[in-house]
Length: 271
Image (cartoon, rainbow, N blue to C red):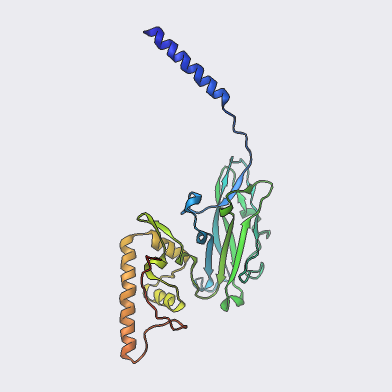
């Protein structure tokens, strides 16, 4: 019995050794780079609006510049040294942001030290420095940009190569208003809970809750405690009913957007 067992073990070792010899050594040194999306760990979960961001100086007090951070992730071997990352603006059909006017150029000397993948890391955050130009009081501009291949990184997945950022100094629809998050096996956005966006509606929400309802808050709100979410949603509906009742007592119309659309918080689960 012992001899049979030893023969079996010897045979297993021979098979294992043979398999090891047939395996190719991983030698691909190509490193690829993608924009990273926490809510899209795999490409099948990616939605185009995840690549769209927004920023408004209206939440920033009196400062003349601010920073939006975007995350990138590498594919391939790590390195024991910092690797430069190249980001480049690309054309868009919208009103384009102008370097030096609406944002600090990606290749500006002040940003060079930040545009690197740190040694031993596969993920890092890059700063997009936005500037408060007077024109932003009257219009929104779009900064569309992509990862540009360099000596250290080549392209990763096509869908993770380009992002855009809307920049303004007034209330405007946050990108996260329609950006979906996984909940109960489905993707839900703020739009599903309270419907269409409107500037008057947005200001009412800020006045009632004291919250900015910008991208950062909306993401925290949607992915946070569901009891708090339901409390805030019910509060908005209740306060709007009270506000409209007072207006009607004064002989005024209900709250409306500039185009005449009545402000409401109707859910849109079927769209």
